[in-house]
Image (tube, rainbow, N blue to C red):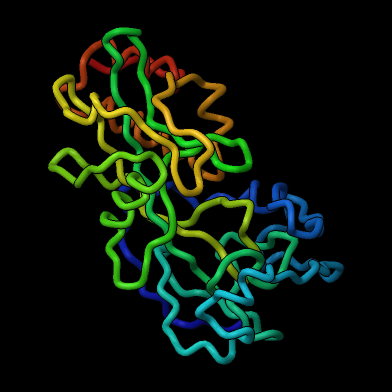
Length: 281
């Protein structure tokens, strides 16, 4: 397999060894075909799998609206990935290969770009003094799953600006980044839309709102792609059921709260319980 150079950006919080994706092998949008079965030990491209014959799929919306041509060989842009190293190219098809391995579907699926498709997400958390609970601002996607607000980055748009724009579009809240806004993660997303040749990557930001933050007085209102938008008390079950990689993003955000100066004792205790850790003092 050939390789082409990618422009990899830094991660604020890097995982240890990149893990094999699960949702990109086991879940799919309603219009996708059934995924070809990919056992855990055959996910990596370096593992021989001569029987592998994934269905090829590109959604009508992809073919109609994508800025990329149908054939990857005609793509003129440089593939820019947040993942470290180089983007591997399939020697047989000349198409980019998912950095986490096989997904059971080839083509672009419902994603508009070959290779990395970049998004930005914003995790907002708060300690609700009335209910004495630790909450996150979440939106409910059309699939019914809860997620943190976020969406695709427009051409020429920064990740931080995209995250704030999506917060306004999906939850009806206008905000800007502040000194308290931290970058949590930059890299691959285990997304149900991913295919062998197109995948999601994101930059995730987090801000924990203080007791006097004006955003606390703003009522979320669902918009664009959201069925609902609201502050929801965090629980282990809720976190585990979040869309795509959002469960991992929330856990990273909670871990950050444990080491952030000024986090109150009640929040630390709740975070420790959610992560099944002993709270730090």
